[in-house]
Length: 329
Image (cartoon, rainbow, N blue to C red; front, side):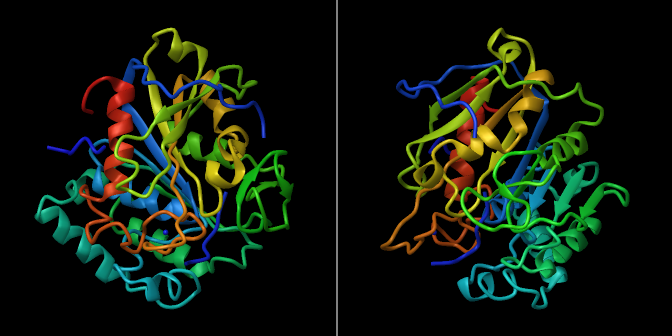
């Protein structure tokens, strides 16, 4: 049974209404468990892949922006800042074998559960922070695990390393905080359309961006609170799916407040399509573990099981999903 306990490396990632200034509280919602998906940017892309693989029975779709494949670093920082950051050779066969072995040991869900999941992988044509090789490897790994037509791989958008948006953030070609790039390209919309098919048009995000607790955050090197965007329909009790959107390095609330949660573009689609959006938050550290940029654990700084269901950060995120649903999903 899942425990309810519920990073230096330079792999970066990540404005709108402010989060509600009140103590973080837990409110339960009518969660449609058949509509749960995850995306991530840069180090958040690695965490998104880990969540998806570890809990493929729960997550029915994955999107990765400027990141590498599941278990890319294979538990070694040297690989993490080497082949997983550049365009060095990545052994996709070894990664697939690891996933299959962990599934056989019941440390992640069955690899077969991935078969019908849509996967959206993005590498900006101007991205000189993370090479194209890691994204190529992610596309190759998933092409061997899901249906042949289930992988969408986008490489032709002229954008630097960051989340491409319609009109929020830095100019498209510029890399820097808050790692949102105004490109006239709706990355969040493309992600959610891939996850859920035909959607209602995006609207103004008039719902509420709330803070909620992250149970077990201290042990997992995470911040005390996360953000969740709650559309009016979800607050009123309608059945709603959940999209988990995971920021990149130097992009948590510790660095940019709610800029990613309010500006990445997910909330406008969530408002009109009955989706909660959960924005987990990781913490930085300048002592052990050395994680001065606030990156997610994709090389093993929390524990050796970081890419399995026993990964501490994975446990915290799953505990938040359970808390939002008021039950174990």
